[in-house]
Length: 290
Ligand SMILES: NC(=O)c1ccc[n+]([C@@H]2O[C@H](COP(=O)([O-])OP(=O)(O)OC[C@H]3O[C@@H](n4cnc5c(N)ncnc54)[C@H](OP(=O)(O)O)[C@@H]3O)[C@@H](O)[C@H]2O)c1
Image (tube, rainbow, N blue to C red):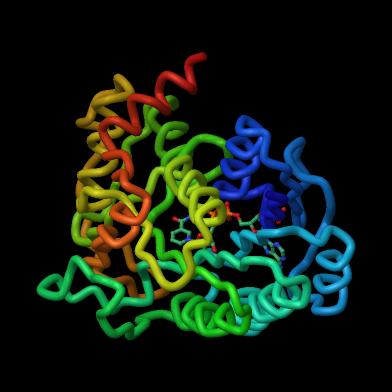
């Protein structure tokens, strides 16, 4: 199986490259602005012609498209760029993958749901209703992904790991520096350990699973609870973490209050469950210190 990762310099992409390499799966990966030792070539998926020609040259069996503009607040103000990357760029990638008969795997988001606490956890059968512009563009990306005859759409939630910058690496750096953190206690989700998601992408490719799957962690918790657990497991003073409300934080883009996902359809298909945050934090703490 030849796998092509769009966004190999990112968090999920770098985990896919690492795992594929360990398993002797042939993998090539792209960067957009930041080359890394895991990436092979530059690609901007907003460029339809170049995306098509790169995929013609590489001719992979599977394309995993992790590339996105996902700074949620910036997407409110940079709507043209958000649409170009997340919606139109995804269409370019899906068309290019389809032209070489590749299986196209697209990563969407839990933010397609409005997040009323009474509705969560959401299943794949629940209706979407994005609250912010980022989520609207990602949902448009889901629809564009269907252009490929063989397509899989995965919806993860708050992805964390240590191979590139994300909320957890930021929090650990702040805790390292002894800084106090104000973290929202009224945004609940099912955080997703990046190595689990990477494994799921490769298994989905291996088993030719198509369609829509929620692909998030098994435990729902607020961002504040998540950060306190991180501090506890990694040996920091959890008292450095304080709760704050979404209203007090004043984020630009509206956020779902509870976008927790029910990922049992995927867990059943794969025959395993993703890692709970406490166990994942233990692993990443060990990896960080080795
Ligand atoms: N992170 C989360 O908490 C979260 C939660 C739910 C869903 N998701 C979704 O999961 C996916 C993966 O997230 P992630 O955390 O791995 O993201 P990430 O670490 O920010 O990586 C994004 C990747 O996309 C590349 N990229 C950006 N613009 C591009 C463009 N125009 N053309 C081609 N590549 C481009 C970046 O390249 P350079 O860095 O080289 O510029 C990077 O490799 C995204 O689709 C995101 O929407 C993320």
